[in-house]
Amino acid sequence: MRNSNVTTMADSGIESENECILTGNALLEMGRLNAAADQFHKALEFHVSERAYYKLGVAFYLLKDYPAARKYFYDVLKTVPDHYAAKRYLRVIDGMTDMVD
Image 1 (cartoon, rainbow, N blue to C red):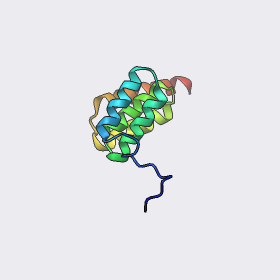
Image 2: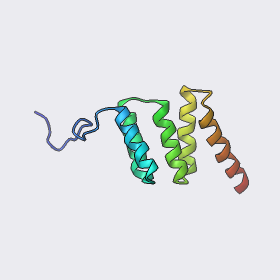
Image 3: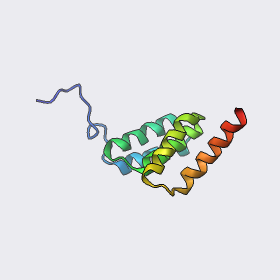
Image 4: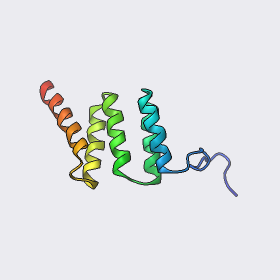
């Protein structure tokens, strides 16, 4: 018998990693950055992918949480070492950090 207090991904109405990414993208475009990040995190529950990590990096970059953004962009590079956009964001973040130090 299933515990009625436990919510699964199927119960939430989200059916796939792709749906989470698409929902997160829409939220990102609307400026709902925290909600977008939540969707990208949910996408990782389905499948660990560079796409979800990249989108998390973008969301946290826009939230100005640069340490979190850096972490997710490096996660992208673990699976796709030549990911141009992730490298570009990291150069920007590193340049901002150098200016503060």
